[in-house]
Image (cartoon, rainbow over all chains, first blue to last red; front, side, top):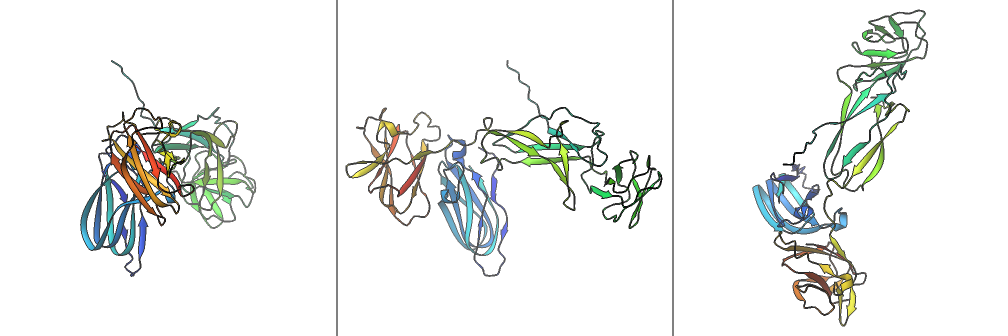
Amino acid sequence: MPSNSEIILTAQTHPEDSSEQTATGDKAKGDGYYSRADGLHTVQYNLNKFIGTITMQASLASIPGDTDWFDITSITETSTTGSKVQNFTGNYVWVRAVVSNWTGGTVNSITLNH
Amino acid sequence: MQKTYRYLAKNKVVVVANMSGFITEYRPVYQKNLNVYRGIDNLLYFEIKNHDQKNISLDDIVTKETSEAQSAAGKTLKFGLTTGIAVGQTVTGTNIIRGSVVTAVTSDTVTLSKSTSASVPISTNVTFQTSSKKGVFTVNVTENDLLEINQQYLKYVVYLEDSSKARTITYSNTHFDFSGVMFIDSKSMPGPKESVSVTDFVAEGDFWYAGSSSSNQITAEPALNGNNALHTVAVYTDGYIGGLEVQATLDNQITGANNWTTVSTFSFTGTETQPQPANFNGIYNYLRFKASADPANKITKVLVRN
């Protein structure tokens, strides 16, 4: 597996206009892409006054379409600054991050190790 | 001891631009096929040459038609407009001496550093270009670009486009072929294997099963358990209401009368909008799925990854 963590969502800043925004990161290879891995993934959310929900999604399809993604785990934050870490396990071919109910703050980055 | 050499080389392709003054002195006989590999970024180098085998600049290529014929060989050329022409640009075209550069520009007149070899007729295409670059550009065909493309031969073309969107053909060989051939190779970096897709449920008594018979058995790949024998399934439903059990067995053959144990359970309400996943561990020989309600058109598929 890669020795360096991968940024799966780059910096996203809310326009601070009280609107509810969403953002979806590009798909990143999960453990299942390589097969025979232990399926353990660790994701780190780097936030600055973030208000909203971040959901990790995964797919078992080799070439995922819109309907192939399912939620794995999520966090809901209210003006959080700093980093949060989550682990999840599965033979997921692809994973991605989805930001929703986002009403303020910044996602500096979301990084993935597996 | 086996010793193997590998080459770290640029994948470079030379093409010939169809510029003014093109007299086909440089005639490459054939163009090599480009090999592009799935599963990795492919950085391709293209080198644009003129008929004289000299790299041409890709910056500010401007082609203009002369608005007046020269009365005799000389250093000045007349154009309707001289926008885009600048001092220092190299000049190519009919009767223009190699190495000529622009020394002065007015609204309708361009002065060259060298006198033309003969008078330049009216409506002659003359190309002006800066020489700060060497005519090399790169194209990165990324892993993501090739993700959904099967192994195959494709044709590609290279053309130049200036700031006014005018396009110039580049040729790949002496036969004036515009296109070259690119081979997409999917064997070297094969990418992820497909997940097993389960769709065939068969009614047996009060339940519906997939994987119960030898004709539709679902292997759990017990020999490949280096991943902690982790299994992941994703159930795709469309309004299905009922339960679904994932069952496993250590029996070596599927006979239709096997010993199954439930290892994971789903309960669907019919409101699911996403595939429902489950993970479980175990060095099982085979898996099967047991539905409590008729799954026809309701459980569209189950993806299994061992």
